[in-house]
Length: 78
Ligand SMILES: [Zn+2]
Image (tube, rainbow, N blue to C red; front, side, top):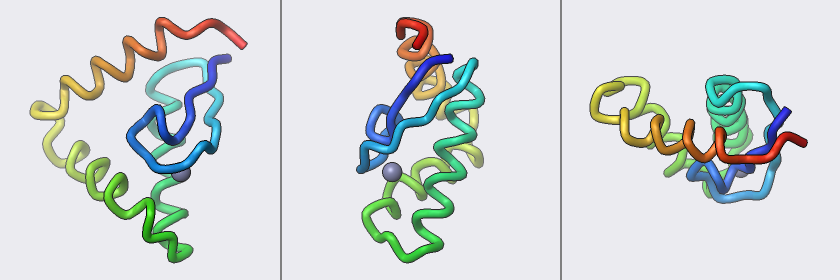
């Protein structure tokens, strides 16, 4: 397992996500952003919109995914 925080993934807080793959970490962050915004947390709104935009424009967002996957790969196992 590896750990990345909300902030590592472009968000505003220090919530830690733990997963075995970068895809799982990204999905976990997506869920976290959705839940935070739903519960009225405006600080996560920008990151939520950015994440939504990535699902809609996957090709344009490839650089972000690649970068996130590289950061994940470079992390030490917990
Ligand atoms: Zn957060």
